[in-house]
Length: 187
Length: 187
DNA sequence: GTCTATAACTCGATAGAC
DNA sequence: GTCTATCGAGTTATAGAC
Image (cartoon, rainbow over all chains, first blue to last red; front, top):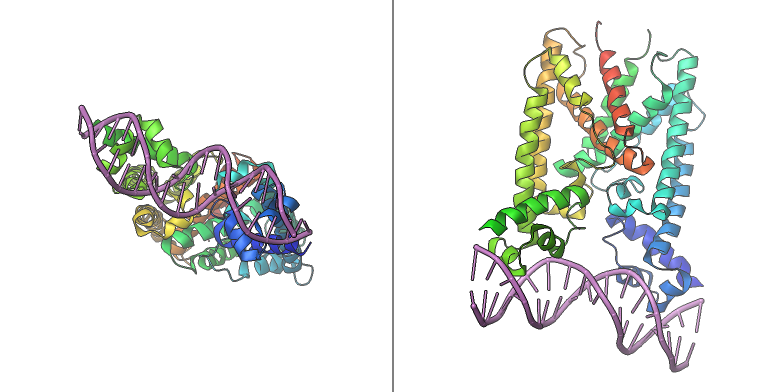
């Protein structure tokens, strides 16, 4: 039963680095130290293992998002706290990196990613709505749409960083998003 | 010599749909109608063919960007014209979709993508700088950084769209970006 | 539950006839 | 310049001993 846990751990590590398609069962067995049959004893196949691994990553990312966007500080500061997270643009989002792969069409892989995105959008939209209610920022923009755009900046920031081979491009993009949000204040 | 052109055409089509890694030489031969040896007669291999195809796509996308961000209309309107392009979020950017793949590490694939991104950022930054000079928007934000963020919104919009399976999520994200830019006016 | 061995297939690339 | 045939390696998955 140890092999099962080791396989999931290996999948979480390797698929963060390389995504789904670029990781082979062979890689997973090697990384985990498990024997050939173990993968297919505990899981239906590579995709089933990936699905379990992504489910765990999704849980971890949701928890992290709740801590980041959490409850202390002003509503707008909580949104800024999410944008202020220092990101390595060359790595890619542990969840969002699967969006570009064709495997995202498979429900078992897409669902954990969608769950994280919905949770994150809800957290950001909640904080933005609160910021609007308390007069921190203008009310004319829909909080849900603003949250969606903020998430797009982060996801797209990874893309731009990788193309430019500049691990900080993403952090400059989120900094600019902060500046734009500030321009919604005091109206 | 017909096979060469057909192979490039096939690569441009299939790699738009599926990226680099998910397209095999087999797929390319089938789509193009060329025989097995033709690929390796005209190109060094799959990557060389992809590089030529991406080069052509990069040229086309640069030209399209120049037309879109072009010269007529106010500077800010030209930026809005780029954001207003209707995008199918489920498809993915013809260039940006390669950013998430590990093959982007290969210079011959990354270069055409980077060339397009630099061209686009330059066009957007130029229009934004002009908008600032003419007093359309506030000057306190760097035009280059704003352009970078706008590109991130578009690239990330594709990611969010695909995860949500909502082809319009990207268009809502760009619409919100427009609204935020408008909040920089009249200060 | 874990392992070794291997099946059946596809991958990117090459050889060589025409 | 194009084709058919095929290589060696790597892919996902299965069989069956322990």
